[in-house]
Length: 227
Length: 293
Ligand SMILES: [Zn+2]
Image 1: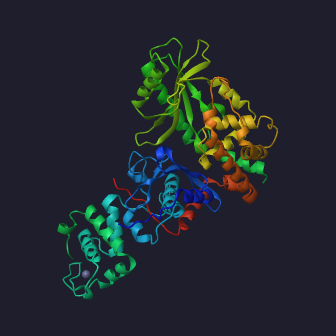
Image 2: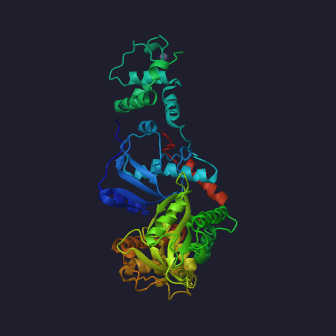
Image 3: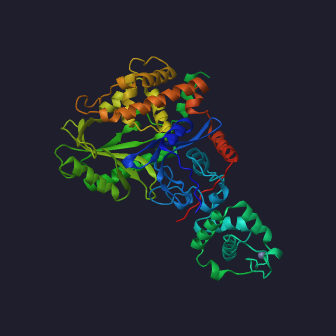
């Protein structure tokens, strides 16, 4: 599993927040490490909006990144607003997508400047009638399918899983049959796609995508409709 | 534009118009709360607005409505003890709302946990004058708090520094400060009591200088019960330290960027909308929200 969290000491986090996010502070309620306060979205001197948040440093997600909650009740907790449960957990990103995009592990500031700010900027847009100007993923498995389609060029989940199975191998031979199901060898078919993804993504990320795809599409193998 | 003009425009931006959606919804919510409570407790409790609505200190970014619900001294229908009054009012509200107990109030949320900006404050009048009241406290050693709504309202309204109080409130919410609003309001009035004739920008700078340089010397007391209610915990060392740090960096921001460095550029709604789109365009590492439920 890829780990996208750099992991800083409390002192490093405190010092970084003081400079870049003075409205957030690291607290230790009941010995948990939580960043609390106001997350403000600003742009070229404009104050666009503020949210009361908690960043739970001890509750990592599947990428090792902290869980973020909106605790001011400003955002209704519903799937359309990407707040997923009654605890107010924000669904900042599609893990598969972030795993593909992020090259180096993130420190707290990069995490806040990136996915967290993007999320709350989208929420401000939603309140103003221009929801999620950066786009949003489809709910659940739909979003995963969108992302895999963009990455692998097939909108058939069975085919995507087959590609990921191949891509999860350390060694890939050009004379093997192409996972697209054409009956041709890889060399004569989707070799380009496979090469591109192998070059772009490390093996751990490719395997992560496979593991997640199997979870989201348990029927992937059997229902695939080959072209 | 002078700092004073700028700040007065910021306050205009933060003013909720009488016909704004926010105030309309608050009024409806208040009526709904009253209906709910009357259905269970009849005509006996006194139900009225408290908080910033009655003090004239509301701001758009943190508009909270206090609805007080005080029972007569000799009325045991809602409960014999303050705690049982609190619990019964909570139970009544829970028929329709998600209720979140706070120190002496009950916060209302909708079924999707959206905050309704309403705190219901149950209590019991001390005597038949219906002025002083006792509130239940859910935390701390002291389980009972004596208060007086009209004294609190007057204390703020007559302070002569209502504009500064509103701006300090905005500062508190934007800086994510942990001090209770009630305590910060008292502190602001206390520090500025000799500075009423100064301009608002001078008042704020004076307040922040005081917080930066002499925060440990500031004392606050509850006007409703000066000797009885100990507010020391609301202004403990950690809270003071946080205030001092925030005040210091706020003053530095004024030096560096002027007042816009504190409260941001003035903007109309359409300019703000444009800034949001522009901000989205400027994002270098886009990520989009998902949902897995
Ligand atoms: Zn192929």
